[in-house]
Each structure stands twice: as C-alpha cells, then as structure tokens.
Length: 518
Image (cartoon, rainbow, N blue to C red; front, side, top):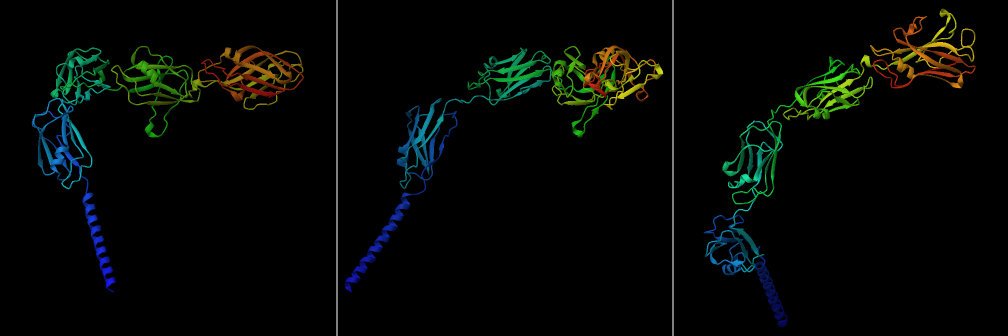
C-alpha cells in the first residue's frame, strides 16, 4: 500500500511538472510570435526638396523600438557616401539630423536594416529603403490646350493665338522654339505667370488659309526641362463660321428654264417624298446660301439607282450649280440624288447634314416608243375599198395571218408590192424617227413560209384608208416593200429591236415582237 502511494504521488508530481512546462512553452511561443515589426512612415518623403538646410530625416516604427539596435541599423548616404548626424527619439519615431546641411543637386538614400529590433527583441520584418532628392525639378512641361484648338478656326482677323502649359516656360529662349507656317507677322509673349504663350498678329490672318503653329521639342520650362515632343496646332483663319445650305433644287429644261421644283425627303417623317414627272432631257439645278467649292460638291453628289450626274457650271465656286446626267434615267424608275455633308464655302465652312431628293423618271415626254400593233392588206392588188385591211395587236400574238394566193392577193412565189402600217405609242411631243425605224424593223418566218423585203419607210399610214379605229390617235409609220408568199405554213414575226427610239431620243429597252400564224 505504501509503495502504491509513492507511485501515485510521483505520477501526480510528473503530471503537474508536465503541465507547467506546457504552459511555459505556450507563454514562450506567444513572446516569440508577436505581430510584425516594421517601418510605417518616413520623412522627408519622395518629393523634391527645394530647401536642403535644416532637414530632419526620420523613420517611424510600428511600435517603440530598441534604440541602440535601430540606430545601428540606420544609414543615410549621398552618392554612396555615408552622412553623419545625431539621433533623436519621440515615441516610436527616430529622427536623424545631419551634422552638415544636405547638398543641393544630390540624390540621397535612406536605409534601415533588419538588425533594428523592438523592445521585445523582435527584428524588423524586412529592410526598409527610401530615396529623396535635392536636385532641381525634373518633370517635363506639359502642353494643356490651345486657342483655337487643333483643327479649329481663328474667327477674328487679328485674333490672338495661345498655347497653354502646366508650368512656367523659360522666358529667355522660348521664341526660338516657336514657328507659324505659312509665315505670319506678329509678336510672341508670355502671360499668366509664364504658363501661357501668346502670338498677336500685326496684320490680318489670310482668309481660308490652313496655318500650322509648332512648338518644337526643345521648348523649356524655367528649370531647363524640355517638353521632349513637338506640339503642333493646325487651324484655319478668317472664317465666318456659317455653314452653306441648299436653298432650292429644281429641274430645268434645255433652255435653262425651271420646269419643276424638287422637294427634299425628310428622314424624320418616316415616309418617302417622291418627285414625279421627271423628264429624261431635264437637268438639275441647285441653289446654295453662298458660293460653294464645285470640286468638293461634285464629289459630294451621289446618284443611287440612276445615271451619273455631271457638273456643267464652270469655275471654282458658285452659289448656283447646274448638272446634267451622262445618260437618260430608266423610264418609270426611281433614283435618289444625295448631297452629302462636307460641302465647303469660300471660307472653308462645311455643310453638316445630308440632303436627299427621290425622283420618279415617269415624265410623259420621256416614255419610250411602244409597238402597239400593225395593219396590212390581205388583197393588195384589189381596189382600195376591197383590199381587206387586217389589224393585229401586240397583246394578241399568234393570231392567224390569212395570206392567200390568187388574183389581187399574194400569188405563190411571186413578189407582190405591199405596205405594212406600224402603230406606235410615243412620248408626249415626240414623233417618228424614220432612220431609227428602218434600222430597228425586222421580219422573219419559219419554214420559209413568207418573205418581206422592206424598201422604204414613210411617216403616216395608208393614203387610201383611215387609221385603224381601235388605235386612233397613235403615231403610224408605213413600211413599203414586197412580200413573197410560199406554199408552206409557218410562224411569221414582225419586230422592232431594242434601242428603237423616237425623235426625242427616247428608246425602248427591249425587243418588241408580234408573231402570227400563217
């Protein structure tokens, strides 16, 4: 029993000792791993120091430091040479006052090594390094703005040109870095404490001239720092500042008389505005609020789905401009004339919006000739009243052409003199073009069933009969020739080829053919 008691006592003592050791170890660990020790601020900072005398260099730690180790870990050097001085303390801040004033025009390096410790013996977590300078300011002067701005205009004839920088410019040599092209007479001066350069002309700026002002890369501030890159400002002088506008657009005839005013299409109203009745022979006239540059206007006028417009007005500038088209527009087609923005006047002011005209080329005087039908005698050798005139319409093809042999008709194999009337719908005021008719008319027949040789083209119809009643009022052209009948049957076709034109030059685009059965 006594032995077991001794063992229990010893075990209790051992457990108590072990517990004490663990607690001591925990306390020791808490001392070895506090929050970090570091430099949290320093002076004089990274700014340039203008007055080097009386400067105190210092660092502030995150908590109070061990002074001997921190002073030993501190160093201040200039161009690699150590600076000597005295230390002072205020709480966690350590100050260092150099024995001699800091040098002007020098770079200083401050360092606190990891040997610096706090009062608990915790070392600086990492070495601290900083730099400052007593050299003159080294930043380049920066260009801020100009009046007029780059790409702007000088409104007044004797307007002042200004260049503004973010700091004062060297007043001694700044003029040698400035230029204006083309050359302008005047004087340069500095205002606003040297931050603004002004050029005041002694003679008016030339109207509509593109000027370029340049401050070269050698322009310096008061500390001698160069801007490093040229500053270029471009402007136009003598402008009135009012953009030209289209005041009217009209169609004019061959004599230049206005025959129709055009209405512009407004995009905002959500609907198309169509100008109808355009004739192929008309030209376009535009009136502007002031003379505009014709070369630029020619580039700005576009025609969509229509012929190319060509300027007829002669000269460099004009307030009234006349256009023609390189070919007639397609009849009954719609084309769009667009004057794009950017048209310049004599002062260089540009129009700032597009203007659009939508035109329908359906003028009654531009209708292409339409082949309506034909009429011919079935008995050309009979008396006038008995020649049995037969009419055939183009919209009723493959009708029967009752060509028969026999007395007074078309004997087989015998060329027989006859005439064919062609009925045509022509444009208002146009007439038959005989030469075009002769070139465009053609005849063909399958199986060699019928032959026709045209010998003469005559304006007007048969002199022995009234025009066909169903086509009263249409224009008639008569083809005189000889027809030879054959025994075979076939399909005969009378044609006016594409390009057939009237006296106005209005031309049919496609072939117009009438096929009949013999």
